[in-house]
Length: 188
Image (cartoon, rainbow, N blue to C red; front, side, top):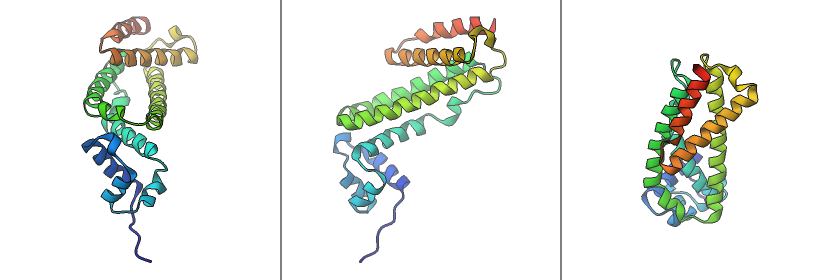
């Protein structure tokens, strides 16, 4: 028995990420990642049971690296509406990179990979919506009684997130009017 190559999950992911960015997504293979890492195919499968799981992790890594943590934290002097405006612009810039560098590659993937990516994307969206609700609750200048109860806070966060997503999908400024209305209703 020879020595086994020891490799970390993170190293595999980083190698696969680099390969994915430099070639067509449809040509990315577990065998190619294993060769690039200098390990057996089985070593890759120990961490990623399918190519779909690996590709979903690669896309998730892009979003993690692109959407820096500070983007989702309101500054101490930042109100909810200002936070939403900043979040919209940061997401717009990140989405531009995603569309330019990643979207075409993802279109060539099989349906299982696309489904896994969408499931992870939806989990990230739920997290963002919850974060918006936290920003609302933490903004001491908001008249929370306007929203009614806790459900009102969550509904506003959902409405704002939906507006941001719609605005980004359509490349318009439609959520700016919503932000103005929210400011008028919650602060004046």
